[in-house]
Image 1 (cartoon, rainbow, N blue to C red):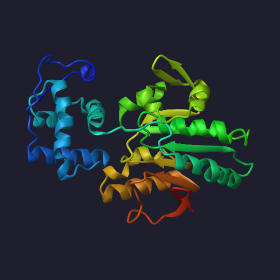
Image 2: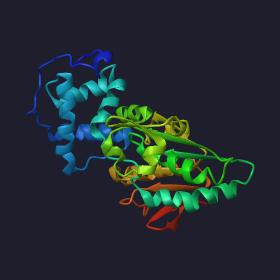
Image 3: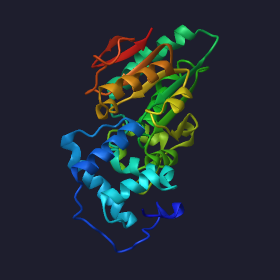
Image 4: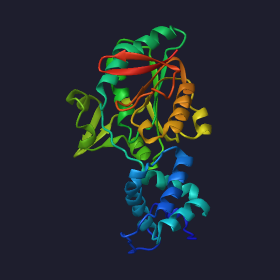
Length: 298
C-alpha cells in the first residue's frame, strides 16, 4: 500500500516524471470505484461511463505516481490521508460546466413571481430571504442571483435583506467561487450593463465587485451526506440544477427529500431543464412559469 504525505497531495507528484497513460481499469476495479463513489456521494457511474471514469482517475493516478487503479483504490480506502485525498477524487470525477445567467427563465421567475410572493407571505415580521445555490460549481449561478436581486428587487423593496449560500462537493471550484474572478467564457452571456455595474475588469479577468460579494458565501458540501444536510435549514429558495442527472433513483429520492427538509414552507426548488421530480417526490407542488417550472413546498 502506498503511503504518501498528506501535505503534498495537491502540490507535487512524489514520483516526478512517472506517467502511465496505458493503464486499464478492469471490470472488478470499476465495480470497486463505482461502489466507493456511490456510497460516499451518491454519484452513480453506469456501465457505459466506465471509460470516462478510467480517463479521469488516470490523471490523478499519474499525478500521484502510482502503478495501477487498484493501488489508488487501496490508498483511498486504507491510507490515513484518504479524507484529504477524497477531495481530489471528487475534483476528478465531477463536471463543472456553468456561466453567468445560464438559466434566464428561472431568474425571470425569481424576479417577477417567486421573490415578490415570498416577501408578501413573510409580511413585516421577517424581511430576509435565504437562497441556496446547491452544486454551485465555480459560483456563477449564485452571483447571477445576487446581481438580479440587487438590480431588480432591492429598488422595489429597500428594506429587503438577503443571503445566498453556494455549495459544491468540489473543493477547487469552491475556491474559485470565493475569489469571484472569471474569464470571458464565464461572462459571455452577461449583459453589458451588468458587466459595467457589477464587475471590475483587469485585462481578460472580470471580478465580481464587493457590493455583490457581500451577499454571497461559499463552502464545500456533499449533498449525499445526511449530517451536512441537516445543517442546511430555513431556505426560501433552492437552486439545484444539473445534479440529479448524476444520481440513480435511490440517490435522487434521498437528496430531494433532504432538499425538501431544507426549505421553509412555501419555499421553492428549481432544478435543471433535463431533470424532473416525476417518480422521485410527490411532496412538492409543480408551479408553471414562462418557459420553466418550479417546485413549491406547501
